[in-house]
Image (cartoon, rainbow, N blue to C red; front, top):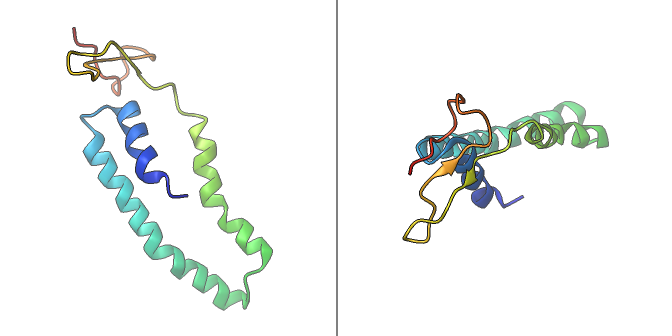
Length: 109
């Protein structure tokens, strides 16, 4: 935990391109905020109903962390960088997937 601030924008920019990065990054942090606000309420309610934090309760609460980890294995390969431009950055992305994919950033010469 704690690396979502670094890994999230990297993966979003690789999979969806820079054009969609700001919108998707904002939605990601909105989801973090909703989870941070509702998570303690849910766990508090579970404690009120059961009277304790039973081991099975903690294990069930680990599922929301396990499911995204498993879904990461279903993601396709992201676009690879082409050649560096004059400023040391990369001016284009070459898609590894099919050119008909709407999420692929076109290669610019």
